[in-house]
Image (cartoon, rainbow, N blue to C red; front, side, top):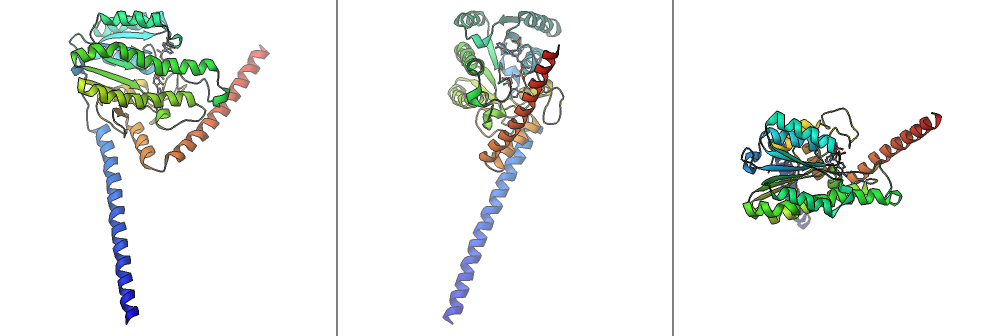
Length: 335
Ligand SMILES: NC(=O)c1ccc[n+]([C@@H]2O[C@H](COP(=O)([O-])OP(=O)(O)OC[C@H]3O[C@@H](n4cnc5c(N)ncnc54)[C@H](OP(=O)(O)O)[C@@H]3O)[C@@H](O)[C@H]2O)c1
């Protein structure tokens, strides 16, 4: 009899444990499903803060670094189409002048431009830029300029120049420009700062370690200054970008996962203040396929898995890049 009582008690406690684990499991699945549905709602249904809030059509200026090609050039065109005046900054004077003229003619906005090479980190250039920006109402800053390793390279084999350039361009330029424009944004209690982040900052990327680290810096720094500046009326948004067709990505054909700069920038400007696939504050992953990829990274398997994936991808890219170099060297020799 005692045996039967013990058996019944044991089965009862087993059933209770199964029920508790069942409820926890269902709740966990429901929460994951809800967070995925939120991502879909964010990217397909919601529209973000209107850029008009940041002085569009009212004399406001947008400063864009790396503004003559790829994503930066597209920001210049789309912000000008929304009636922001534009300051273009990158290295090549002729390209800057041509784009400035095109923007003025096409959108009847004012433009200014400044040619500088951010790898040099010249104090004289930053002073001149500060002077240029002090006479206008800067309401938007797009810290877009970026540079990468030439090919995936083991850290200990990377050149000091490339390491230096990535830090100057991806890290220091963003901080310097932000420091220049924030005081006037704070004085007006209004401003928007967009930082061009990368999935390489979300998941550490072996063989692109310095680029990856620089984008992780941008992510962390954006969240920190985002919290500091929000009470002062300034919105900071780090944009998690997977691949986009551009010179830097060396990808020429668009696909579902790799948009052209135009739809990519449209998704960024259409989702200001909306997180999309991102799970960290002051961050957005607005392009639909990038948002789903970001959600999968954060919610499926662990970070070690995704780092290993990146490792395998970069080993493969490095092999192909080294073969291409060999072919080019052989062709040059035979000429
Ligand atoms: N494309 C992607 O797949 C991808 C993915 C993730 C993140 N991102 C980020 O998005 C941003 C833009 O990338 P992108 O692909 O659009 O690049 P891109 O097409 O190569 O354009 C780079 C722009 O920056 C300027 N620039 C380059 N080096 C410079 C320097 N040292 N000083 C001043 N200007 C310089 C270039 O003009 P000049 O040559 O005339 O100077 C050009 O206007 C970067 O921060 C990048 O890390 C891109």
